[in-house]
Amino acid sequence: MAKRPVPGSERSPLAGAVAVGRTASDQRLEVTVLLRRRDAAGLKSRAATSAPGGHMDHAAFAAAYGADPADIEKVVSFADSHDLAIVSNDAARRTVILSGTVAQFEAAFDVELQDFEYDAGSYRGRIGAVQIPEELSDVVEAVMGLDNRPAAKPHFRIRSNLGAHTPGASSSFTPPQLAKLYGFPAGTGQGQCIALIELGGGYRPADLKAYFAGLGVGKPAVTAIGVDHAANKPTGDPNGADGEVVLDIEVAGGVAPGAHITVYFAPNTDAGFLNAITTAVHDAKNKPSVVSISWGGPEASWTPQSLKAFDSAFQAAAVMGVTVLAASGDDGSSDGLNDGQAHVDFPASSPHATACGGTRLTTSGQTIAGEQVWNDGAGGGAGGGGVSVAFEAPSWQSGLKSTRKGGQASMLAKRGVPDVAADADPQSGYEIRVDGQTAVIGGTSAVAPLWAGLIAIVNAASGKRAGLINPALYAAPSALRDVTAGDNGDFEAVEGWDACTGLGSPNGAAIAAALS
Image (cartoon, rainbow, N blue to C red):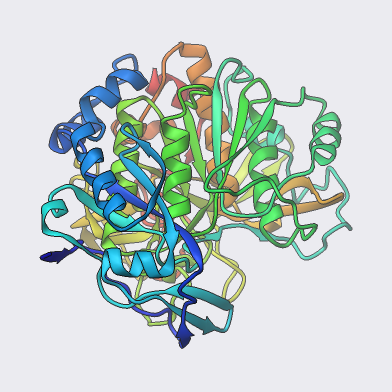
């Protein structure tokens, strides 16, 4: 049977990883097969032009842009021929999830799975492309899950004096204090659902109860939803993934306590990450209107099939009126790579997500005294930003320039990151409670849920879903507080959009007007 490679599925080992042997042939795993969608070109066009009030519901979207049932049957037949079990299939999400042994998957996709070890641990991986039968070459867009290397890292930075923080200290803020400083309109987000994507860790209900009681706001309804066998599993380590999970919940809930917060837990793999996003976007029961993502990695660490799959999921979100907010990273313009080049973080670099950068905030009394790019220097963290190498500049960034440190400006040929910003420096960070301890946490991880809370409030007040907010914000830049001081390494802040803080930090009431 003739086979063809899945475009963009090529893998190479992680830097420094060494193969230590073939993966056990009887090891069981699950693999996500992503199918083509009906009218992909039409979806992309609609995603760019959809406006509040003109979004599709879940059933209409699935019928117009989901996978064709005939394509699903082709993949099911292929799976049957290789004795692979069908875990689930979903036309709206365009996924068929298969289960089987390593030996069965190696035969089905013509790959060799090996165990690799590297400085941070181990993973199951492959080298080269995934192969599929020729008759499926126009049907299958991605095959994910054969390789289970970590796909992303959380973008938060915890201040070192864990447990020693005094609530109310002038160098840190509660989420309601930041909402007031940034002029968020009155409201609690009642009737809205905020989805949080988490790739590890968990939260303790007792921490949430104590935290929100301390804020003096009602505790939001929080629901944990497991994806791909993951679950809410707090580790007891606030410096690990627990810190991310709780930061997201407490920031979003502190700003919009009337919103229902759904936390989608998934394995930290490309398949798990994608499945969490598509599960949230297509959740017809909870119906999130906002998705907040605080995990990511340099574009260079992703396969082209993954970049395309995630961006397509965000296009779907836009058409259904779901706003996607993604942290831009905490390692400045290098995004943590040491090759001397500038890099941006993904999924923030998707043009159908709103990339959230970081600032350092200073106050005088109850008002903002100053704001600059968050950059604590070498090893201290800095807001991510720059120019994508994977995505074209969207229409709403037409004519903009990125400015290198030193003043050299060049027209954006590709997608510029970030779009917006807010307080992210741990030295002016967010007061939270995690694993029974008080802490101050920063990072662009905090910015995404802060903006998510704002969008929930705006949606609740307008009675409409904002969807993709970027076109409206770029058309009304005065709705944001322009940040013109500082740099993130290679790029510097200037008047107007820049590759450090985007259009700037929120002026909440003006944002509400721009989106309404």
